[in-house]
Image (cartoon, rainbow, N blue to C red; front, side, top):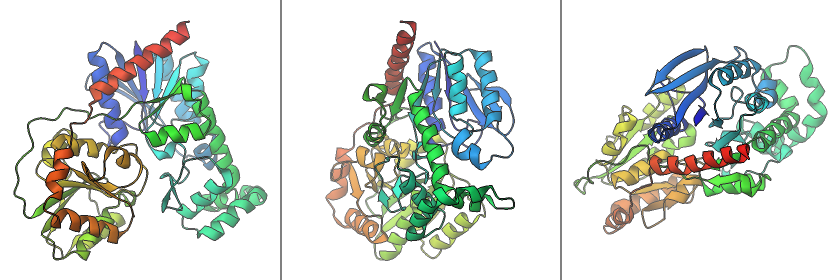
Length: 438
């Protein structure tokens, strides 16, 4: 069996959770005798090997248009992807991304060649115009594709007040022809044609799902979203995340004071780092330390500068350099609890499983995958309000209730691994090929 995996990017480039997942899946499937190949977009075409897996990078268009972004996808990327299909002739294409570069045009190329395709819903960007599945940025969305509502939320994400965004989304069905006038910026064109553009994107999304033999959901909320959008139940499979590498050693015994808390994640507003920094400010009396391991490099961009300014003046907060993914679990063993203050619906995040593998509880937002992995009061705490005050209360609880932390640590269990995920996926691949043969 030869599989072609298609993520957003790939190593040695800077990669996220999707690529960590793909690399681990390839590793365990390869051990089972499956031939794995990776194809991912890049600025230039390239071919190389990474950890024993052949990798093909296909070039993207140097100037992505609005129509490519929302509706058609990138034809240059699709042409490069088609050449990889012809060279590799995989039995199955497994799409782990959906983007202008990895679009319905790529799916159509696979279908032209009679190659069955699967897709995994890794991030809300697959179907959400805002990219977070947070309606107006403040409340979880059920993920139902509703053109005018989604267009208004998209406009709001780009700075337009709710009421004006809603009116503009309705008006855009009429103002769309004006978007073709010369000399307009892309932002203005998006405003004038917001709802029609979103309709085009939704059609592409439905075509994407309908063209898949199986759609893999990593969470219950994703499964519900797919069902809500009329993806047939028999085409959906729930295959939960797994830890890429098994935990090593035992939980460390560390001093109970000060309480050592840790955040490990990307430098991104949706990760909610500011919530926990400001919550610390609300509790200057707590004997607590907070180490921030920022995955993205701390360059001198505005977000990084803002983070530095927020942490200045509080000696309890320390910015740490990122650690390799293979060292995350051992690093987390030096802390009492992990903080995951996400502001969006995640299908993981992987760091929750890494914390459990380290034997420490998680204090996380009551959203998405976090709420499915963390059982409030058993192996962690769920913060139900995305506010500094709510996070401050959670920090006080963990610091001032002496029996709480031992109780939560006792409830932590070893997470499932990517070996188990690979076994489930292998069965799905075999089923898909059996149907094709029949």
